[in-house]
Image (cartoon, rainbow, N blue to C red; front, top):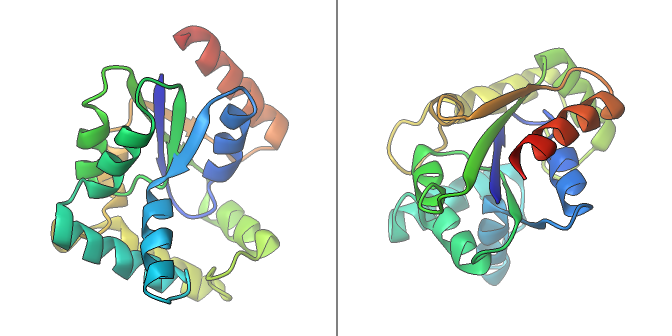
Length: 180
């Protein structure tokens, strides 16, 4: 089974990835490919660099390149892919017949608090910056940009994640039980 995750910043995607990894799923992220490329170029993995790096890679190799790279890595294995932000990535992953796209949703205020608590490098420092960064990712101006709204519309399942981790884990276990 191949599971892909999409969702807005700090919705809980990393928590979901780690939950599946604890159950034997190989994990990866479309952003991992970008981070590797940025490192080779001597650039930090700031949010801005990740966004621009993704645009650059998609411009050079096609809009589904980040997902295509992961498909090669995960051949036939149970795996979970984080950071799916374009419809082309979804379409590339759908080439594997056992692919499910899950959108992780959470209220904006909940996500802002999570973002502040995790203090990840490159996360916005103010709520206004958090909202501005999110708005930049919602609709792409071209085929190489992020488009979270269009990507979310392709989701096979939606998980509302405004609660605690235990509630999320119950939802994930129910999903896994019904699909394995």
